Length: 431
Ligand code: HSE
Image (cartoon, rainbow, N blue to C red; front, side):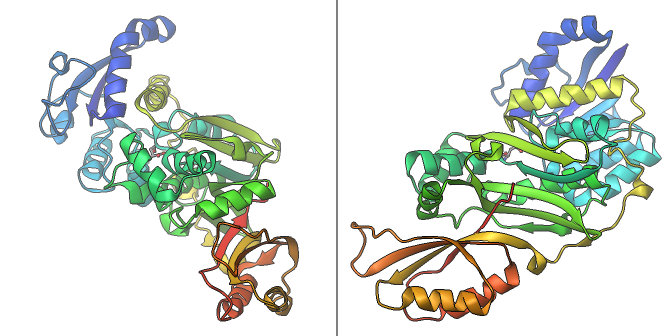
């Protein structure tokens, strides 16, 4: 069997994909009797230096011509725009009954519902293993393997750039801006796209897709609460370290009282937990189901070669005439869950107060806590001899409390004249 493939977008992922198909075609054929045949490619710049010889492939200036003029069974979209040409190309391909594979999480998180509906109507697949956690086969795990498990919760580290920044800040005792510049130099993110990563949006796009697969919820990006990592100070990382935690950008989704909880935010994670030990650009996902206490998958969350592996697994799924749906569910069976109210979320918190070193500070802080029924778990007050005189950091961890109650107390405390800096508030991950 021969499968004709067109590829739109030849960046790092697209180039590794072309390379791998060329190098491994015989190997694929021997294993599966399928031959992958690249019948057309399109990208921004024909002349760009690439890791493969572009002249071996039929070139199209306009990606839409890949599906207009070319025999194509599968269109692979690697352009990566949130809408625009990516949306148009995917939509038109599906309407022409061409299967689509994409790595574009922003496109699917924002417009997936419409696109999956078109795919279903036209009886073709829209597959996206490469869109979430690079080379980790998390989509097929949820959709093909444990689809009939009752999933309780998904927690993960879904963005390599932010994980690299937080890990490096901790390991090298460097501040956020310094490490962000190194991440840009290393090509993990770019100055123009950094906000997508460090703002937590890329993780939230991926969480939107995971939540839909795990809970059968409609794909709705608006369900997310998102906090990025740019306010995480090296002081908080070092204090967390002393308390036995690392700070990680955690994305978590679950259902509670028929409401959906999808939150991406920096959290303190106990050092003995697997998620705390996922360092550098790696990603990981921890799934809890009625059968599995913890299914932990860790691996390369980005990069050309790893992500190409996910695309090839989607090609294999299409070639197997899989009757599994793109999302596992029929579109009409997806449910609209109400969004969880962030004020109802209960968590323990890490708090850092920078205060004047004068009599009565602690009692005033704890008195505000008492008024809001906040119970203190630990207090750390270690004078820093290099620091300014009469200034002291006070680190407090709390027992579980509703966010509204915490903010009520914080508001009272931050109005006090002994508070010298904005109070740092970071939730503590509970598993
Ligand atoms: N910018 C993403 C990351 C790439 O850093 O993880 C893969 O989605």
